[in-house]
Image (cartoon, rainbow, N blue to C red; front, side, top):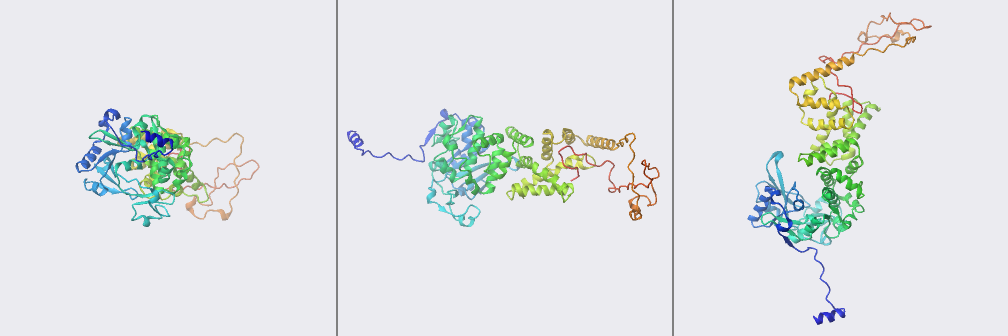
Amino acid sequence: MIKKFIDKLRGLASPRKPVSPFGKRQEVPVSEHGIDPKLVDERANTVVRTLKQAGFEAYIVGGAVRDLLVGLRPKDFDVATNATPEQVKGLFRRAFIIGRRFRIVHVVFGRGREHEVIEVSTFRAYLDNAAAEQVAGNERTSRSELAGMQHAVDASGRVLRDNVWGPQEEDAVRRDFTINAMYYDPETQIVVDYHQGIRDSRERTLRMIGDPATRYREDPVRIIRAIRFSAKLHALGFTLEPRTAAPLATMKQLLADVPQSRLFDEMLKLLQTGHALASIERLQALGLASGIYPLLDVVVQRSAQPLVRAALQDTDRRVGEGKSVAPSFLLACVLWPDVRDGWARLQAGEQRLAPFPALQQAVDEVFQSRIGDVSGGGKLASDMRDIWLMQPRFEKRTGTTPFTLVEQPRFRAAFDFMRLRAETGEIEEVLSDWWQEFSVANDNLRRDMVDGVRAEQSQRGRVQRAPRPEGQAPRARAPRTSEQEPQDDRAGAPAGEADSNAPEAEGVSSAPRKRRRRRRSGGAGREEGDRGAPPAEGSGPTRDV
């Protein structure tokens, strides 16, 4: 004791040991954390139990533990283990290894639309990025160079390959936020916490593990994740720690090197997890309203427009009710002004395109300018096209169009889109109400509804010509020359026949009037009145597409 005191006075005291980046392992019992085991998905329990029975460590990890701690039922469950991806795959009948940057295993339960995926990852080692292999390009340009690498970074320090396995304490420090770095064993009900995640959960703090700027540099997508977690947990009182929030706006340019497909997926997570409006508010509040991803910039810019805001609110509501949502619907609403304006321009411009070709070309232009090749040829693009191309068909409520349209696979999405247009005043609500009734009616009522529209349109078509104001003389007609006489009797009556009933204007000599040519028939077999309803204000031209 005396020697230590003397050494301290002389300045010879031994230096303090550096704080370990791995934190201190704490095993928190259920009496402290209070997690309700009934909130844990039985399929996640099955995965953990199977891995432990095979002799491996296994825990529920990440956001599921975070949600369980605050009393929420997680929508997704992830499992972490010390088994390698190949070992995990060998334990389950339907398991698939995916990913190159991070190799993980998807264990699939059920089939079809009711299937559920439990994502299983292997504990990863904590490695110094300075010791990693470095490539000059990015994920796309250095693909061949990255083929045999397990740990690689690009010139900015962004991790491109991270498949070196390690112990649990190293895996914990690799995770982003303290509240996402806890491990829950559903059998023993113990929570393993290395970085004070339970404390931060109680204090409602979102705190990055380690130096925030370094962590954002390692993976710039953490910038978007910070926004998403902040929006999701804002209603529960969570706030970003100032030190975690400070570098967000200044480091967003790092996202330029992230593959577009990954940014597209992260954008969809922002908008489809039930907190789309809150995410946009957080982006604006933190100075990230632009510069993250071009399409997300458009969403933020147009979030106050009635149609887009209604779509965002509708998406949040459906997620809250446990209903499925499709990104195609929301993006179709966001980009509809571009399609609508392009559609009108192509019909009115020099090309004078017919309505349907104009609409098709407008859709192609929007995909090229706004989305590119991220998903232009996939199901999302196909669904968006169907939603847009069906809109003018709703104007046509006679003939066979209503019966065929209501049987289309994407009718419900297209109808919901049209319903939002009506609710925001772009088209008349009577059209939305008619299709709502038609979609649930039986065949007899549907025929009566179509007959009613046909009769209404026929009655509307019998419009009397307005009377000529008193004292106004009719317009004089110039005499027709012989060269102007029609040469083909398909154009009207015989050329020498004149309108003997044409009145004369005062002071103007009588002259044969120019005959009105008869309109040729539009085609055999077409029913009388089989035309689309006149377009409502703001809608496109009517045409059976």
